[in-house]
Each structure stands twice: as C-alpha cells, then as structure tokens.
Image 1: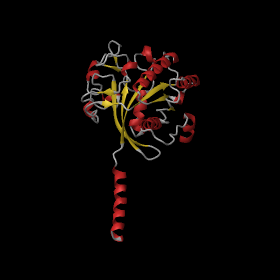
Image 2: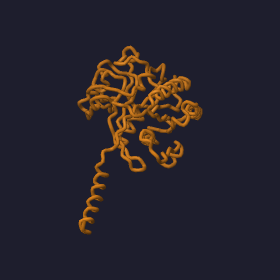
Image 3: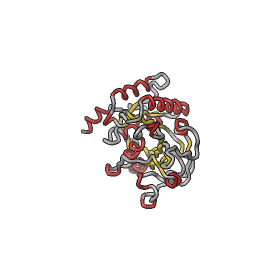
Image 4: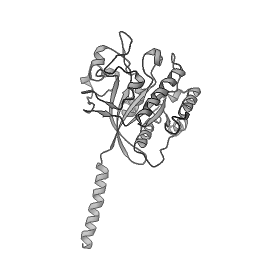
Length: 285
C-alpha cells in the first residue's frame, strides 16, 4: 500500500470513529421508581416525593417542574390513557450524560397507588397484589399508555404532547427506591421504614440493582437520615444499596441518583462519585 493510500485510510478511519461516536445510540436503561404509597392513612398528609423526583429528572427546564401531582383520581381519569387502569405512570424518556461522557437514555416508570376520589380507597387496577409486591415487577406491559406530564393533563390529553409507552414488555433494569427524610403529619418513621425495608427485600429477590434515594433533604430531619443509614447497614443490604441524598425542589443530586444506578447496571469499573447533600448544596450555591 502506498504512503498516500495509507494516509487516506487513516484519515477515513479517524473520521469514521468520530462519526460513530457522535451518532452512537445511547444505552437504554429502564428504571422503576418505588416507595411508600397509598391512602393518607399509609403515607400521611403528602407523598414521599416519587413524582417530584421523576418530574425534576425528566423535565429539563426549571419551568417544567411541578410539585403538585396526582393521587386522588376519578374513575374516568383512572381509565383514561395516561393512567390506563394501571397503578403506575410512564414518565417518558430522557438522555443524560455521565461525567465520563457516556450517554444514557433513561425510560422511567413510577409505581404508585391511585385513590378513588369518591370512595377514598385504592383502585384495584389490573393487578391485585399488595403494593410492596406489585411495585417490584420486572416485566410490565400497558398497551397505548400515554406519558404522564402533569395533573392538568388528565381529561384533556389532546392538548399535551402525546408520547406512548413503547409497545411490548417494559423490562425493568433497576430500581430507585425513595425514602422521605422530612417530617410529614400523619406518617410515622416506623411505617416508612417497615415499607421500604420490605420493598428492598423484594427487590433483592429480583436480583436487580437498586439505589436508595432520600428525598426532601432541603427540610431533612437528622433522626430520619440516621435511620436510613442504619437500614442500609443491615447485613442483607450492606454494600449492596448505595444512598443518594436529593432535593427535587432545589434540583440537588437528582441526575446523580439515576447515573449511579446506570453505573451499577453497566458494572462501571470507575469510581461513581456520590456527593453528600450538604456538600452538593455548597457546590451549587
């Protein structure tokens, strides 16, 4: 091969690599967000922040963040295409880039429990299993289910972007398990600890990775933070359940939580940096 031809071949190979790098399809990660759900008797006066966490992660601009999400539903909203007679929401997909430059496309569902606004009891939906068992399902299907955007979308879906959950089975690659470290009227720390412990045990049985995400750290209670540390220090969870401290309201560590999960799923060989909440706040502000 002549020098000129060799040089041209090297240039071609370099340009080809650059093109492949810029046009590569991001790694797809399917995530289920879970945590304490149910009636006010179970979860207290407000939720643990699953929807707010998803909202902040999926919606890029700050103007798209809303802290008012659905729990009480009418029968028509429950059977509409957004909820689709299921007790989970599809939040759509979003591309995020990790610190080392890897692009991930996250598709996110939130496992919850909707309450009938006339009876104030949970809708039975398709599956009758208790939440702590149902929420750890690793294969989910809901034909023609629409992406959830906000509470105002229900009943007027045609006025909002309509993105459909991809057809076929949604195979969960990993879980984000949420624990609220703020004090909520009507909810005891004991109830939340019991529920999250059982959820983590059930996730462990699926052999899927999980990240424990503490929410509402902008108004955290120190005793609750300590209880979470004790929980993951138990022998069955030790070194297997990392904690990421977040605030969806202030947008602190939200992307980090999902990237950490992606690294575990991909068996990332490098060091995944998890910065404590208070340090992250100082760096941000």
